[in-house]
Length: 329
Image (cartoon, rainbow, N blue to C red; front, side, top):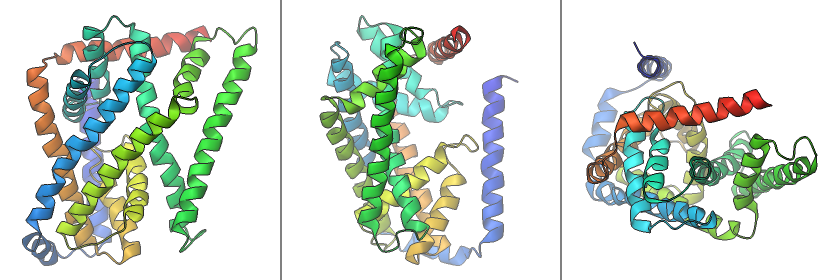
């Protein structure tokens, strides 16, 4: 059994165990769950299906701008196709190596080095993780009771803490690069060059694009909530799904199954939403973004074929690059 297959099986078992524990702890009423599905507003749900395409289209534009900032030209059409195809590859392959697929697409059409192309992926992820972290910090202050009934203040605190940390990291890395022994350290150089696009004059446009992408995401989620007769403010949805997003990153389940349901049941309870509705919403959100999104991405993958063998090879190159840098330190 291969390492990746073993990892997939462990995650599937992790999802099963988490869901088993969840259903043991809550008083889940199957009849209410079925009734919620029967009363679902199909129109709102169908409208939400546009969400995944819009969100990934905006993010592909951001990635294109990052590539442009690195001094290379890459068409928006190709960036969007690569983004959609890699989304599907990331879901169906163990280890979530979909991001690596974008390296292949980019290097196939651009005279760009492996290291620089990899850096564009890292920079792209910094913006996504940045939103998750700043709003997750806000969620911690809000849901823990430190700032109860002060949701906007909690968001301000979360944003301030994140950017304070980001600018501090940039300042420290600048100092390290001035040191004779550390100035040419490849890890320090790579990290600093990645962070720079999130803090320099080019950052405002990239953060604005990121904000647009997440607003589209939250409004699509609002439509799914409406489909099960739940009305939540966009700011509440943003906090809830930033916490959920961080939890589902944990490599203990497949596609976030289990961790997503547990976090949604817990967080939506703050709004008086029962577990049956939370789990129904979770399944609908998975269908609208993961299943539907992967089906659309599959079309792009067929139109822009790439072998999983090549993706795995690029994934090994990334791992070798990281391990080699560690050995040189």
